[in-house]
Image (cartoon, rainbow, N blue to C red; front, side, top):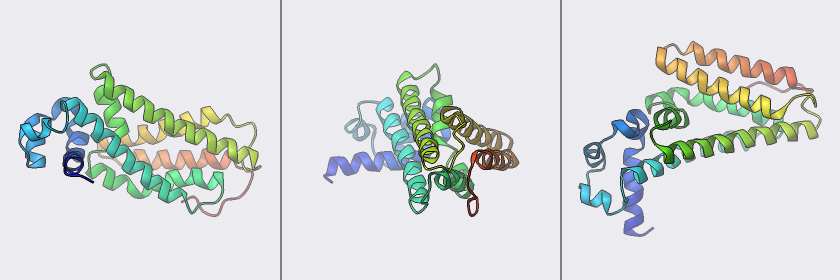
Length: 203
């Protein structure tokens, strides 16, 4: 990694939590220079503007979650168990996620909606990838005879994402984590209802 790439990565990593907590509008250039220890000129020497920094930070934060979920799902053998793995990941990581400002997908989608088209489009893209992955897991489970063929993959994926993100939003807004715990339990109930085989453990 050359010097320019290292500086860009330093800026991204140093402002990742900042943007996730304060949002695009709430994060000033002064905040960025303070967090990075760089001058405004140095930041703009590596990024065209704050928009470009925010987009890079969002993708960085999203990638960290992707890598965490991938690590959780990798040792799980069946599609059905991998779906349970999503719940296991959020159940284990939600406290750390809250300490860093919450879910970057939810935060960015809410922050950028109607105010920042580029970030909103990035959030939409990420949401689409997540949904497609869940749909494919359900389809694979159906092909393997693990999941009820009557289950509608798209509907299940939308339900699961809505419960997870809604639970995170309500828990963070109210300070009452039971909102999220109930979301976990509801998702696991729906998974059991569509399952054609017993699964050892839910998380």
